Length: 496
Picture 1 (cartoon, rainbow, N blue to C red):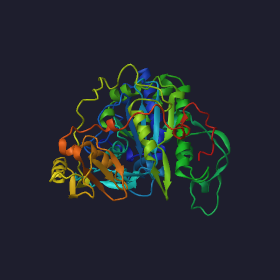
Picture 2: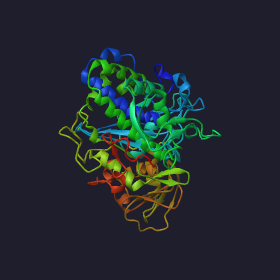
Picture 3: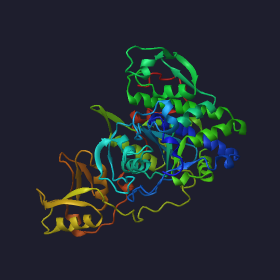
Picture 4: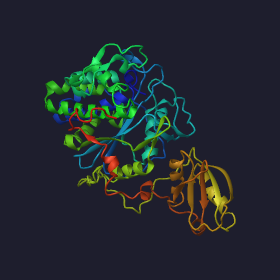
């Protein structure tokens, strides 16, 4: 991490999410005026990108993806605002902001902290790379290396591994800066379904304590804004999912408040200062001109077209499991630059300043670093499993063994996986021309090579995008849970 890093990052994922879209939109407003350049220069901290994986999804989306993460560290100015209890930066939640190529739509997809995911190999502060982890909590990625500033690169690797989307930029939010941000905007309108007491903020209190918030609409800023976005036990079902929904409503209200104040230096300069002081960014956003150029790309996004939703999920015990079929449809929708209600938002430009490569273009190289695979010969061709194993080893895979499959009439190569192995299996399948990937009851990843591999032992690696057809629209149970920045903060008050 370079720069002062301002005592690590946000109020857990909670604040981070609340600040960041606010951050992005605030700075974009400053960019629209164009007078903030000198004031912003020198205020922006960056983190090192040398921990970003070499095995990344291809850059095929016409829009841009911005990952926003946060930390519970108590370091620096955050210590007096109720951060985490330890010295290690921890991320409670994160969201992926997709800015469409038409520059008129945006959607923020929240990823709950307790989501069970696969964490790929990540670089630690000493330079060594970790072994991949399977079926672990999402927020563990930010803590790899156990430093106060956290590991943004590892979280980015994990999100790219999960979604198959290239992350263009990563932002880490500081909740002390967020506190200043909500004050600079003049407070944020919120709404509560009931009175909130001290025990709702701290369930370990023996009594309910004094009333912290009254029922109904009100405006919060500074410490009160921090308290509002971290309420969990006093509203709805008391879950983190419910809190995420409330934070999404808060961000929407923040954006609406900023836009209502107008584009003038008197109101925007304090917001720009608070925004830049609140975050640490990747080198791609690490200067005023880069940040302002990115901000300008969002100046025409209407409140109604600024959407918030949570990745499709279900409970798995005390944790959260991602519903893969629905999540895959969501990622494919964003990759194709379609809005969640099915509109084509790719715009006249295909994004990022380049014409997209045709479908027949060669895909990115496959890297199997950290992936263990067993290989089985599903044919009568002698030595086929050994041949496939050698191919895997040349691409960095660890081959745990070769054997003959139970059946030798396999026409097409298949890759199977057990719990937590989907992402690794999909990477493996790319090396075999996009072979089908199937979940099995057996642990680990297995390649059952078929007659197609015997006939063509070196198929062209398939792009991750080629295996996922883009749906015309998402399932209604995904879209029905979304909200926009234009929504009334008093609607759906329980948030879970």
